[in-house]
Amino acid sequence: MELKSPHVLSDPATVNNKSRLGIHSSLLTYSQPDSPGKYSRTGSRKSAGSLDDVRSNGLLDAMMASSPPRKKLLKGSNTQVVSIDSDIEDYLSFMLEYPSALDSFDKIVDHAKNKKVAVFLDYDGTLSPIVDDPDRAFMSEAMRATVRSVARYFPTAIISGRSRDKVFDLVKLTELYYAGSHGMDIIGPFSQTPSNNYPNCVNTDHQGNETTLFQPAREFLPMIDEVFRTLVEITKDITGSIVENHKFCVSVHYRNVEENNWTTIGQRVHDTLKNYPRLRSTHGRKVLEVRPVIDWNKGKAVEFLLESLGLNDWDDVLPIYIGDDKTDEDAFKVLREGNRGCGILVSSMKKQSNALYSLRDPTEVKKFLQVLVNWKREEERKHGEN
Ligand SMILES: O=P(O)(O)OC[C@H]1O[C@H](O[C@H]2O[C@H](CO)[C@@H](O)[C@H](O)[C@H]2O)[C@H](O)[C@@H](O)[C@@H]1O
Image 1 (cartoon, rainbow, N blue to C red):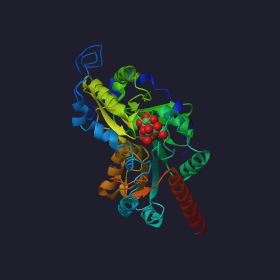
Image 2 (image 1 turned 45 degrees about the vertical axis):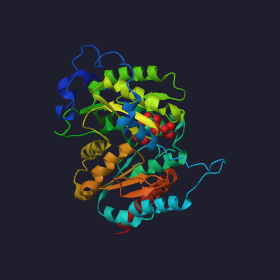
Image 3 (image 1 turned 90 degrees about the horizontal axis):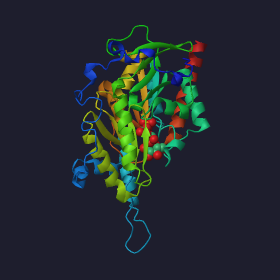
């Protein structure tokens, strides 16, 4: 499986050809706004709503929940009250529900016997550690080498909330498939028989490589661009906020913002989105992610890629998905339903998940991927001997 630089594939000239690329009506859950020439409903920012807005709609709770709870300080001292017992208890109960994928490796590969394995990987928090500066979330060379060898043995895709170009710039491996913007921008394998399920796929030839481009939220590009500029403007006075344009979605980071300003940032995003009923915000790890309201997510991206790879006979395929964030839950859910595959949550804290197994951090992810490659090599060696 060798693809040359799929990330540099420019969008084909047919992008405006609605009959091929127009968004499929089944993906739309909102009707078109009727304000011509503007992408927002009013075209101007509404006056800030009451802070109760952001509290009552649960956004603030979600923002708080996306960071580990701080330990309480003992009154009059700097000593943290570390409730070791309850922390350990919590973690043990988490591990019982989501056993370590390393400890359960034999069980996992038992399911993989005589099946084709496909590997799906999230980027931030899975292949790279979480850091304060999103532009410096680099993966280690050792991780890169490991992912490269995974791709040598299994069809492998990265499914990230970042734009496809940005995640490729970080991963730098041409052997993989990439789905950026939470799966809304996919470069997949060339499909000889385009599926009826995805009518707006474009097969294209780029530098001798035939690939398939799928962008189900294409019509939202100008709207995303506009909301990105608005969000930059309205957060520029909040020290530490970072707004990233990920082509089909926008990330508003509050990791480096003083905690007492989190409500303000949440409220401003919330107020802005009142003007964009066709956009919504979800939250990740200290980030609000603004995205189109379409019936598409990382789970659908997994299904799309499996179908493009000709791996949609679920009895014959074991997809493994590794991710750490809320948006990865959609993929875990798809795999969990009907026992179709194996979701692995990366977390060192207790969380509720649709995954089946867990790994603590990117270091354990690397170990797991190495063990997977070794297992496959051994399988091939055994078959070679027979
Ligand atoms: O789907 P992913 O590949 O996991 O992308 C989700 C978000 O990841 C990035 O933000 C997260 O990682 C940053 C770097 O470690 C960290 O600073 C931030 O707090 C995390 O939320 C990325 O910058 C976002 O745009 C993605 O939405």
